[in-house]
Length: 492
Image (cartoon, rainbow, N blue to C red):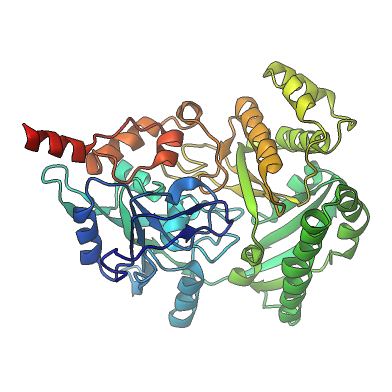
């Protein structure tokens, strides 16, 4: 039976880069069942899966996997001030949560990421974000988790709703136990006005940010031009009469059509030359630009990236470095594409400064990037370890995607970008995506990492909720082997 964990099943994530079979796989229907699972496996490694729309090894466990899909309740209440609050089961997909909110109230989520297929617990636990606001983690006011009582060692329910404990729980990568539910304050439904424009430089892109605070923008590879998706809340305006047709165009032309073409050229034909020609001469010409469309936020702010299997790395840089980072990214991608590509004197100086100039020369011409590079502004989070935690300025998430397999050359490029940008700009990778970050670097990037680890140790002194990934990136000390201790005690 699934509920007693005797069923064995292979776990495969969306990107197909993770594939493992735990010894136990559970599908609990209640909080009591979750507590029973934790008590039964107190000496083993326990991780949780949601929709599996992530690429990092955060979900991997050889022992126990808890699938929370059945714990997907949505409770909507009205507070004393007339505000709407949502309490959501950890296994609820964001797409379902939006449907429930919109059918039962006039409110919506405070921020919406690009993808709505994630579970709410997975999105919160990894700092999932949209553009122009804080991450979803920032808005959570209460999180309930199942973890261990430090005195009795038995599983119990924790309620995290204040202070540093809440800041830790808001983005914990599963290290504070099984997320049972999260609570946040909703916001009134709103419309977003969107217009796609071509810009001559990143300076021109950023000039439009004050009047379009929700915008995201793209660096078009090989053309090395900029497209800005100008977005702002549409105050005093109604939904465009052609919004429905525009959504159809976006779905067929971009969500499906563009991705099919890129996949065909890069993965099927494997033609670097055709990829370059497509972006230089075709892509920006056929994309509909300079048309303002007003539509519901939950339609405007999302895409259907889940339609095509891909692999992603996302690197965050502080706002003060975004111009330099954009120049650096363009130069590095150009040099990876061709050993003869010219790069700026500034990039050469930066690489020389961090001792990575020869490394880039060695890798030159090894990979042609084949998808637009996406930039999204994310406001500082009130958390301990989300990607914009502890900041006093916005950060920009820079996303790189590949549709080609094998992915070793893309991963080499991604690791080079992360290593160099961490040294140059204090860049941070997204926890849920390709994340080759060592704990030594994380300790420098996240000043409150020690506090986070201390809070985790209180409810998980034996590292039950840790795995190789979180140990590597967060630097937890080796947990106590409780099974070995129990066996030793029995023998003596």
